Image (tube, rainbow, N blue to C red):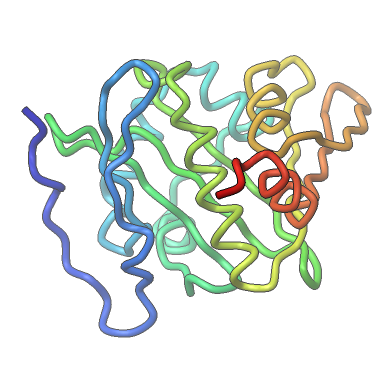
Length: 196
């Protein structure tokens, strides 16, 4: 039985309700996804404090940031236009199991990042979240995602390639810089959809 989504208070202005939804993963588990809220800061802090060293190294390219109230406010307070983030929750525990976000890099270009709890990996959650972010980005005038990750991080490389349908990559000093053309991805998806 699927539990109810965790309870939360929605901000009065600008909160994109259209991005709240249940997702069924490849392994048949379900997660509740919604845009991030400032009230998620304590749970995010706890998740970072409890994360395994490999997750932290991969997410922060080797150096874990110092958890300050300013950093947590930055990570959980977004405008849902230039800065957008989604959180996925385990319906059984109400605990957050993934966060995906984009932040502006340049006009029409945003950096994308995703982190998934180890127990929820390899089920398509990161791919689904990045695809949702891609739709949100296109609606907000972002046409390209950039991503920086450790070159050894093969799962993120495969996820970007799968969700984006081809990624331009440059590897230097053990770090991969990737670029994803969201418009090209959307056009490719339309070509593959069956015609009525």
